[in-house]
Amino acid sequence: MPLPIPVFIPALLAGMLLTFPVLAQSPLSLDESVTIAVQANDPGVMLFEQRALALEDRAIADSQLPDPVVMARMQNVPLSSFDINREGMTQLSLGVRQNFPKGKSRSLTRAKRQSEAVVERMRKTLALRQIVLQTRTAWLEMYYWHGARRITEQARTHIIDLGGVAEAQFASGRASAQNVLRIDLEASLLGARLIEIDRKADMKRTDMIRLIGIANAARPLADEFPHLRPFLAAQEMQARLIRHPSVKIFDAKLAARDRDIDIAGEQYKPGFAVEGAYGARDNRPDFGSIGVSLSVPLFTANRQDRSLSAVKRLKASTRLGRDAQLLDLNRELGRSYAGWVRLGERITLYQTDVLTGAQNTAEAALIGYENETADFAELVRAELMVLDTELTLLRLRIDRQKAHAALLYLDGDNNE
Image 1 (cartoon, one colour):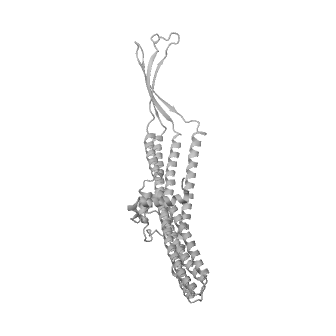
Image 2 (tube, helix red, strand yellow):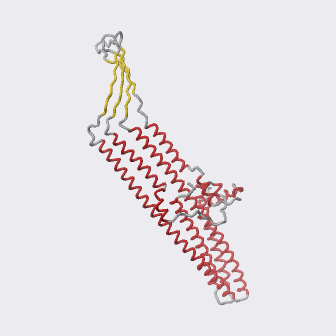
Image 3 (cartoon, one colour):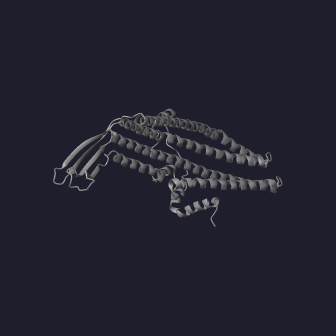
């Protein structure tokens, strides 16, 4: 009978830890995770390289002359007798014809394919940059849930220790049994919270499996809080957004559209073909012939004019897409930078005031309870307030690092 999903995922992860005991001894840092993910040869990234190579091959193939046409025919055969030796004009004709595309179409087509190859390589660069961001985000989320488990376990242990105080008060007749039962309830609730934390950590680990593989995802995380390289000032990052791979994709597309316009312009020029033929006759002089044929674009209104108009409109739409992408990147930059700044302010407030105040309140509540000046419910609330404050502070620190990672995604770094 197959295991249900909530049971299957923890069982799978537990199996991974047993399968890779050596790797489980080596902590996995954020930088190492990124390096592994970038070097993993993800098929979603490598497909862009294959497309680029295919377009480079097509660039060479499309810039060659068309294959020559070889002709062989028996001509001027008398239909009354079908005797090929009766008439002097009857002959076996062998010829060859070579077509030449209009103007510089071949070289322009080659340049277009090369620009299309650049598009695919920029998509590869963008995919790698996205993998870096995804890896950092997944690692940071795993770090949060591991930290949340540690903090919650400490709070649960502290709550259980308070049970000893409540039992001592109850034994001396200075408190009711309700306080002891309240401790058991709070310890159970924290136990349920730990199970939920483990569930979310397991789900985040599955994200890491996709990025760095099962073996590395089974390793424990490094204990030290991760630090990312500094980013530039907001104004400098905004000026560098034109270097973002998603914008460079549009730049390469615009270069390809320019070549389309040039190719459409070449269609106003005549195309030509050169042909030669040799006619062999029986017991008579052979014939030779050579000629040139032209395709003259006389009626351009509904063909060349429309084709040129179409590619110009496509270029205009591509330019609008580039402008829209820059607007989106500017919006993301503004949101991520504002979030990074405000999260830093909240972290400072929590570290200097909120956490200290929560800890002092818990200590005062414990002293008051021991001196019978505060009730037990107030003591429990104060301890849970410390837990919530520590979890909120950890979440703020992780969210600020995620905003930092988003800014590095926009600005770029050395992991591409």
